[in-house]
Image (tube, rainbow, N blue to C red; front, side, top):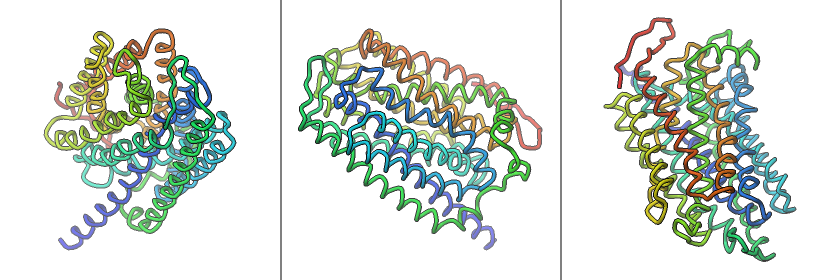
Amino acid sequence: MAQSDGRSATVTSAYAIVTCLFFAWGFITSLVDPLVAAVKGIFQLSDVEAQLSASAFFIAYGVMSLPAAVLLSRRKAVSTVLIALGLMVAGCMIMLAAANIAVYELVLLGLFVLASGITILQVAANPLAAALGPSNKSHFRLTFSQTFNSLGTFIGPYLGAVLFLKGVEVKHGAVITDEVRTQSLAGIDRAFFWIAGLIILVGVIIWMGRKVISASAPAAPDETARRGVAATFRDATSSNWALFGGLAIFLYVGAEVAIGTQMSFFLNSDRVWGVPLEDAAKYVSLYWGGAMVGRLVGSGLLTKVPAPRLLAVFTGMACAMCLYVFAVGGVSAGYVALAIGLFNSIMFPVIFTITLERSTASEEATSGFLCFSIIGGAAIPPLVGLVSQNSDYVTALIVPALCYAILCFFAISAARARIAHPTGVEEPISAV
């Protein structure tokens, strides 16, 4: 009994340490939203060009996810996490250089390197958080960890708005003075200097807890260590559910990121609230804060409601809200758009764990492919930017609405599917 209690305490400690990683990458990722608004003004960019900042960040998932899966299978969790954190610090250093010499292309490179580290981190941390405890609570654990990710995404946009957007405006005819431009670049410099320090602190925590995490992490099959990127990709794509889950992650991340990066411009628009850009960017925190609240509530709901059923409700609500914004517009549309974050909340962790349960590919390959699919955050935002550039920011929400509609279909299909166990035995679960 005492041995069992000791094992449980060790696993809980490992889970707590891993959850710190979720906060760190949530905070950093959410800074992309005010950064998109800032670079649009600083460098006088179009909507599509500004959205390339989001693309540079999220395209790293397409480039690095499968190599990260191979790295994870060969180096295991702790070493993989420390490598990821080192790469993130390197990305911050590039961002510091970009802010000091004011070169947009260097901003894109810095975001790509930073996101490459976050990609590796997610490939390692998502399945680790899901696995640290009883298997029937995996949805709960990953969703609860994602709550701390949302805490980071709640804080990030507000601080980014204060640091990046003081005096910056992007409406037609607005002029950015040299003083405002210098002030905004200095804010970017300060932000990424302190982010580098945060990452180093998290790295120290992981290093100090490396024995606890290693002792608690599930062992990977020996054969996975011999796989390369091509073999991992073949393994992942051999499973229809890995492919379907990959599409779901692609659409979810693309929709969530597109709404977040467009929200400042959306609320700044005269068709919605017409508030100054800095104030509009501060309100983006409420969008991500909704995700935090939703994950806290969703964690509890997932202990009572089947995951696919809850996912169907949340995706359906998000789709309906986008359609309301598209059809109605006006002041009320601003509040509805901000509230979409509440229903985004459980989507990533539930899609992730639903896919892991149903995929016949290995966990490493499936996790790598799902993180690869986060490249949707690079593809969908420029598409939304193109729509807004040729119409307006209200009309552009029709693109996320279509994404959420497909995600609702994924959830309904998952409820009618079978869970594939490691032994190869399958059992049906209840339909919606």
